[in-house]
Every structure is written in C-alpha cells, then in structure tokens.
Length: 229
Image (cartoon, rainbow, N blue to C red; front, top):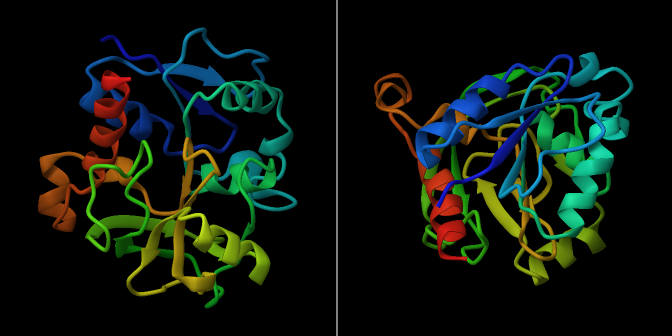
C-alpha cells in the first residue's frame, strides 16, 4: 500500500520537516507538503499532520491565527470524512483553537519554556494511534513548549475520561496540565492532539541522545492500522 500523508506548514512552523521525515521513515512514502495559504488538500489522503512550532508567531493565542487559516477549512472537511489528523505541540494547540478537539493549551504553570524528555503513560489503546501500546505503558518522548498546560472544565474532563479519550498522561506533570493530560482523542478516535513530540524520537540517534525512540511506535501504529483498513 502506498500511503498519502500531508504535512501542513504555517509561518513559524519549525517541526514540519521533522514530521515529514518521520512519516517517510516509517511509511516509506514521502510526505506531501501543504502551505497554510492553500485552500485545498491533496486527494485521497491517509493522514494529515499539523506540526509543532510557533504558527504566526503565536500572536493572540498559540494556534489561534492558524486555526483560521484557509487550509484549516480543508482540514476540517477531511476530518469530517474520517481522514485521521495528528496535531503535535502547536498542532495540538491548533486543533483545540479550531474546535476539532476540546479544551485549551495555556501557559505552563511555571511560566517558563520547557525542553526535556518526558515520560508519558499510555491511556487509550484502541485508537488508530495507540492500538499497539499497552495500557499504562510508559514512553519517553521529548517536550518543548511554553503553552502546554492543558485545560478544560470538569464536565469536559469527565467526558474525556468516561469516553476513554485520554491518549497519554504525564508521569511527571511538568506543565500543570489538568489531570496530567499530555494528549487527547476526538470522539471517533481519528484525531489525536498531543504536546510531546513523537517525530523527534524515531531513529537510533534519538536513543543515543535521549535514551528512547519510542515515538516511532506511534507512527508504526498508524501505518500498520491503515494498511489493514
């Protein structure tokens, strides 16, 4: 199967090449590159990825301006048709600002930018992105953010818990996220937003530098599952 995955680049994205490289490394197919000002996505996509960075300089709120860019209308349309969407870091912020996922990403509790390798625990194990993991399994994945503090009201958090939509939690909550949330899923499990960067932990050099290439397994989950669809 030849996979078709698109990576959207916004002014200020700085992880788009990392994301494209991760997709190509795992799927064997080069990622299709899409610009924020485009009004349409390529046809017959298997995956859409919104990468990390500082889209539009994080003016207003992180991800707020990107959520209103022309390409996001197309992303919403494709997501409504069931095309999987992965938003990492700034991509997660864009997903919440656009309404594709609930909640918001606020300033870190310590008011400082955090850059380190984090340990996250797997929650949901039935989605396209997480089906290859074991419940409670720990992964080591880099984080690099200033606005990674996940917030939602109690009713929303209870809904996420009750519907098994919490994909990952921090084992050590570095940023103050409510209920230690590091990543959440849409109701249908086909949209994942997460603050940690799996695309930065996919190759042997990541083991040497950070002690882990656990991020690769998330991409393997996606493409293995898509191959069986």
